[in-house]
Length: 321
Ligand SMILES: NC(=O)c1ccc[n+]([C@@H]2O[C@H](COP(=O)([O-])OP(=O)(O)OC[C@H]3O[C@@H](n4cnc5c(N)ncnc54)[C@H](O)[C@@H]3O)[C@@H](O)[C@H]2O)c1
Image 1 (cartoon, rainbow, N blue to C red):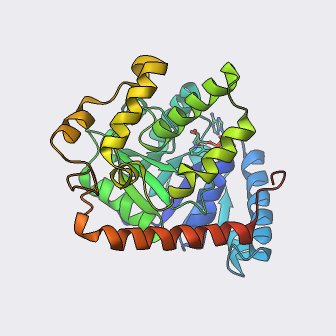
Image 2: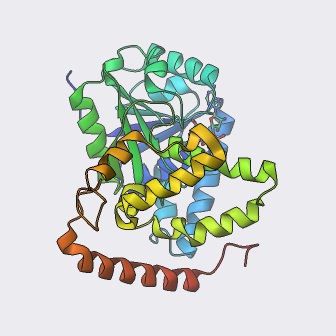
C-alpha cells in the first residue's frame, strides 16, 4: 500500500499514556494533536501536559524550552473527527475497554484517509480483535508504549496478518526517531511485557492472599533479587548464567509444592539431558559462549556495582526505606 510521509500525528485519548506520547512526538519535531471525549478534556490535557513539562525541565528530565515547544505546538482538538481528518498517523490510547475502543475506531475509520496509519496502545487486547473495528486493517497494528511514556524505552510493535510490511517498518522507523527501542512481538493477549508482568503479579497476589507474604515484603525481595538483575539480563540470560540444570532441580521442588503450574517445561529437561546447561557447558538459550565466561562475569559484576551505586544515589521511592 502507498503511504505518505508521516508528519501529522493524532493521539486519541489524552490521558496518562496518550499525554506522554504527545510530549514525545512534539519534542521530536512532529506536528501533534490530541483528542478525547470532548473538547474540554483535550484542552485540559494540554494545560496538564505543559505544566508537567515545566516540572520535568526544572528536574532536568526535559531540555530547557521543551515546555514552551509543547505549549506552542501541541494542538488540542475539538473532536476526534476534526483531529483525524488530515492525520498521517493516529494512535488510539483510550481506556482499556473494548466497547470504548470499538466506538473510537468506528469514528476514526469513518473520517480518516484510507492510507492513514492507525495504531492501538492496548495493554492486552489482541490486535486482531481490534482490527474488526478498523476499515482497511492493512494500515493497522499495535504500538504498545510503556509507562511512563517519555522515559521507558520499549515500544512493542504488533503487526497482524493483514498489516502491510511497509506500514510496520514505517511505524518502527517513526518510533525509533523518537529514541524508542521497538520490538516486534506476536499478537497474543498481553503481548510479551504484560503477559509476563501479570504472571508475576498473579503469583504475588497469591502469596498475599494465602498470607505467606505482604505486598511490602514482595516488593522488597523482588527489587533486591532477580529484579535487581533484570536491567542487564532478561529471564533467559539469567537462566543460562545460573545453569539450566539448577532450574530443573528447582522446578522439581516447586511442582511438588504447587502442582501443574510449576511443572518443569519439557523442552528445558530435553536441553539439560543433552548436556546443554547454559554458560557452564554451552548450548543455552542465549548462545552465551563458555569461552566468554570470565568476560561476562566481569561485565555482570561491574554492571551490578554501578547499579547499586546509582540506587544509593537516587535513594528509595518516597514512603519506602
Ligand atoms: N497506564 C499504563 O500504565 C498503561 C501502559 C501501557 C498501555 N496502557 C494502555 O493505554 C491506554 C490508555 O491508558 P491510560 O493509562 O492512558 O488511561 P487514562 O484513563 O489515563 O486515559 C484514557 C483517556 O481516554 C479517554 N477516553 C475514554 N473513552 C473515550 C472515548 N470513547 N472517546 C474518546 N476518549 C476516550 C479518557 O477521557 C482519558 O482521557 C489503555 O489501553 C491502557 O491499557 C496503559
